[in-house]
Length: 198
Image 1: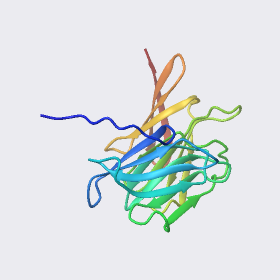
Image 2 (image 1 turned 90 degrees about the vertical axis):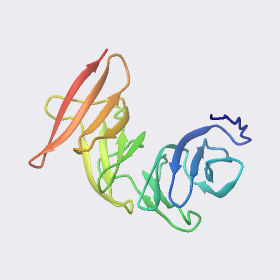
Image 3 (image 1 turned 180 degrees about the vertical axis):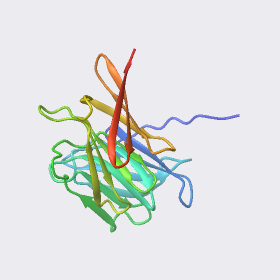
């Protein structure tokens, strides 16, 4: 039989949550900006009032978080950073920032862990832009950008991304109608397929 606990947070609203099972059961909570920075906390999964780390992140918002290889990667809104990766064991002193990749002007809205990389999704909402997948290595170093505007598929208003066991990306777009976009590689070139969502 399970039970529920009700926690009241004194801080501003939670914008992203990430589960961390490395050496215990933890939850990372990202809070909306208050005074120019966002707060990132590592807390106990069984008692959210037990705080292990509190980090002031110099960004306007944290949209998404994923964990891989001992780092928590943040998809952020910032004029200076595209993403930030903090060590899960020493976030106060060990972190790596990523500036905006060439050709990308929008902040990421989602993130997913791939086989050897972290993939961020840029929405394609600004005039003249398309959605893009920006891949970084495990130390937050950029290695590829895939702009989703090929094969007569032009993706805008992307809101969510996942990856399957065959390394196909699946993207959902907002709006009416919404679309499910599959992105995959064949012999080094990118293929896109869109399906309208009803």
